[in-house]
Amino acid sequence: MDVASSEIYIKWCKYDLNFKDTQTATRDALSGDKLLETYLTLVSRYPIVSIEDPFDQDDWEHWIKFRSNSNIQIKTGAPCRSERLAKYNQLLRIEEELGCYASYAGNVFKPTSKYFT
Image (cartoon, rainbow, N blue to C red; front, side, top):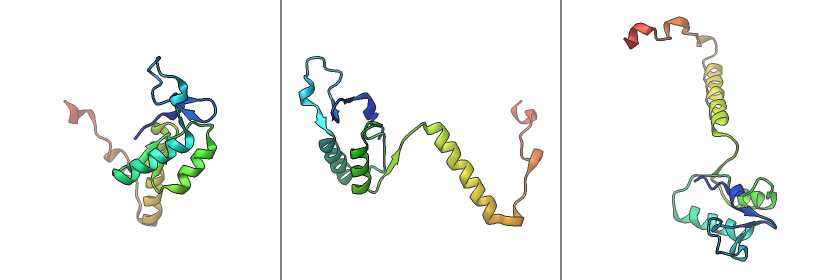
């Protein structure tokens, strides 16, 4: 679930879930604690395994509370870089496990243009 909380964050650790509604006053915004409670309720009811950016980048108080009260994955930052890094790290672990039996396939593994004609 990608929340993008920085987009709905307003001052004093409040989150305006109705940010697109210009008629709604910011007094209806949720506190960080209330948003945390909402996430924990959703996680207990539904099979959510990952929440991306649940709180604003500067709302450390609620990041810490969320992390200590849940066991789901929190993803932050650009997905492109972190997923590439995870794949690379997995390759390093495989190579380490194979030890001297690991070998580089080289150009034999690369498909040539004849496969695409």
